[in-house]
Length: 232
Image (cartoon, rainbow, N blue to C red; front, top):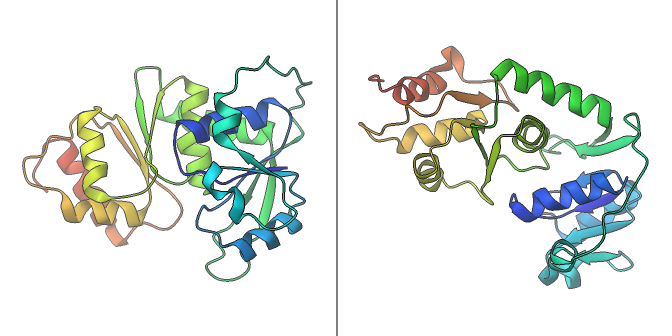
């Protein structure tokens, strides 16, 4: 397993492709983990190396092999050929740990691709779509719907390294985003900063996952109404 400690970015996408393409199991971790927490997870998950920014190498637990993403991603190297096994351990995702110790579950490449392909097909996702990826890749929703699904369907993928409601709206409008993947928390926050008259008609799908939507889907419905140019 190769652990990845990176915020959503072009480099984190490249890191995922590199780990998957070399036959390792991809283990995305919360960038907010403290050194002691990271040490415990590295031991539990039998991590071979941690891919992270260069300025975090000296903060890794003692004895952990660290790889600076700046060196790995920017290096010009010949492609590594590996034997493709769809039933190998492809990714290891953790729970949030908000109600206890985080648990980890491995998923095969076959399962990952089947899930993301079905969602992409149901949405009719295509090469002209622009998917906004703000949910962190270490969340199941972020990994499956913000990272893997756009790559499988050939859609453009726009990343944000952190969630700021007003900045998110600026990205949506400036880049003419067509699909927004979020959560009830994100949609509630967006609803608070939406201004009357803002044209979001280019957004054709709002996807929520990770928790139950509020009763009567009030927050999501207001977003959808405004995205279509109707009064809330």
